[in-house]
Amino acid sequence: MATLIAQGLTNREIAEALAISERTASNHVQHILNKLGFSSRARIAVWAVAHGLFTVPRE
Image (cartoon, rainbow, N blue to C red; front, side, top):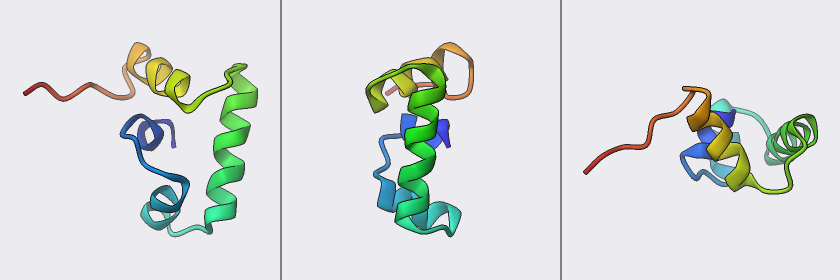
């Protein structure tokens, strides 16, 4: 889920990718924010990169 957030996907896009409801995706994102003590999706993205879960594509 953190990797999908790091890719910049919306809750709706995450829901479609995982075949879950948008509400469930939203709840999962909120749980990640709470668990990590973050207040933004951008911080999840930074965390995912820092922990090797996602690499920023180079052009």
